[in-house]
Length: 566
View (cartoon, rainbow, N blue to C red):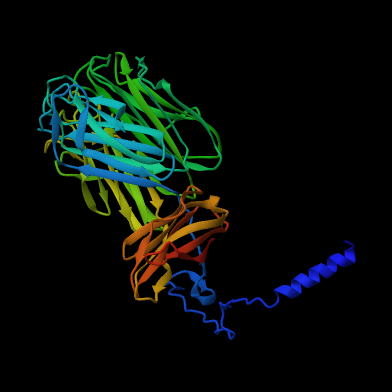
């Protein structure tokens, strides 16, 4: 069949099927006339806060906030003092139940721990004395030992430790033990302080290598040398703590210590004597010194208070450098002798620090008062404590007794706490452990370190729920610039669930980039609060979403907020 014939056949077939019936229905998904679009008013909106400079953008669902953060240091601390007595006859360390501190680190941090524990005259104390230890996460990391004049006389021990701890939770304890197993020793008052610094470099050594000397002038402790280079001018906190255990070579006159910086012995010195020769004996020295940027060497030095070999079985030498623009500080040392026969605390006229805080701060104070061999000192010894703005801090009290009348005797006191901006006075106080018996301070060190608290912007934005139903909210970062200059910046939500940390920058890095969901009650309000400290000039920007979760769903809205911190 030709092409023409084929086409004719197809045409005939099509004509044949036309009479067939076909049933069909047509459905339209849309009306022929569209309904008008309705823009619904947001259920949750942003409003201006009571402080700071803020701009609320379109539909009240985004905002920009400008803040000015003062310079300061990222830090954390825990302090505990107590006058609850504990005792033991164990020759191995047991927990001081009143000296247990838990800390939680957001980032890896330098940690400084000081534990100071003592008993007053008349309390049960074996003449061989006690030892103390610092324990971190179940491990004893540092020790020191001391003995009193005789049984039931005043006896105190100080232990120092510094290290780097990883982010997370840590348990830190003060521990104590008898220098002779089976003999009872006790603690009447103790202080334990833990400081955490995420971006401060610490230099420290703890060594149990024995060193001895018969020199009555300072010689280097070969196990106590720190060499380092500073990038900026700094205030250096230096603590040198040395001790020998019972049975080590130690003259009855005991030993003394000082510190050498870049080849020069500092003026500060301290001394202590034991119960008798070859008994436990320890000495603590602390000071603040200005160090310029560059290379430095710091050495611990020690000497015998008289004829005979003196021993160090363990020492802790700690140095923390704080850039001068990030902390406030005060330090006084004096070799002017002062005495008292009072059993109630009196002012050490050479241990007074007046200072003005430009911001609310957390303040650490340390006072060490001691006398050299030969100074007038009753055999019952002396006590010291701190006074803050005229208020005697009773739980800062500590006591010690020497080998005998007119022998070396020194005591350490600690205090830590918040102080408001303004003028303040910190004093060292001292007293005799027996009324009418004269004691002496011939050399003392009083230091104060003030760490400014972040600027609290309470509050920068208000969050308003315009619906009757409860919603859930949280903050989450999505961008940033130049946050390295922020030593501490925390963004909080204050809601029906209370205050919740949402965004946290410590030492210039995020430790938290979003928070837990918080309740925004029906027709209720919540607040965004910012705490901030900077390391210096510049501008940092932190961009976050306020996530608003619709109840009973997984759907949420994002509301952008930009924080500009100059």
